Amino acid sequence: MNLLPKDGIVVYHGRIFSPAEADRYLQYLLRDIAWKQDEAIIFGKRLRTKRKVAWYGDRGFEYTYSNVTKIALPWTAELLELKKRVESQTGERFNSCLLNLYHTGAEGMAWHSDGEKDLKKDGAIGSLSFGAARKFAFKHKTTKETVSIHLEHGSLLVMAGTTQTHWLHRLPATTRVSAPRVNLTFRTIVR
Image (cartoon, rainbow, N blue to C red; front, side, top):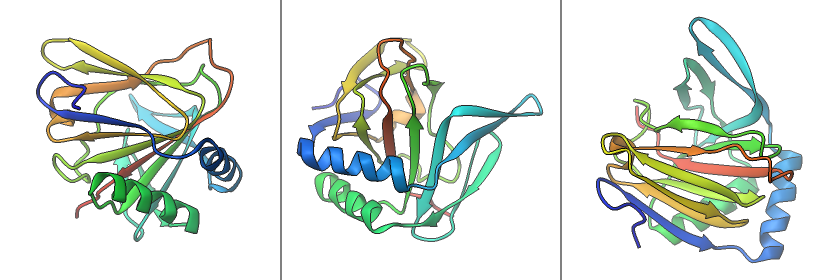
């Protein structure tokens, strides 16, 4: 069922992993991913966030956002397992993944859309969540109407169609969460 009332497609598949599988993948992701502090260049200044990121793909894809370019690392066996599960669930094909590590609820993401020129236009983004359940919100760019959902440990959310054109999304910070959350966003890079 589409969570958005218009101008895009967002489908929440809920938990697609058993609790034991989700726990195992969370431990792997926290321990073995090549995490780096995220950076952004804002008004000419390079800023580092508390949130950490990692970028993986079929080959050394470049991906630029917030005026910083990342080069994709080669897939790990575990990331390929996760990619296969998301592709099987959605019927989509992805060639890259941006991972985000939020250490606590104090770390979040401001309103934005994933409209970078490197991404397939109106392509699907498969978003896996592991760890702390967190609220995720959407806001229409014109009407300002909002939709929100809590993303559970081991769950999948898919954004597709014109969602990035018409809607912003965010992960609001909260003082109620002290555990980490890892989010994997499977994407399609085009040259």
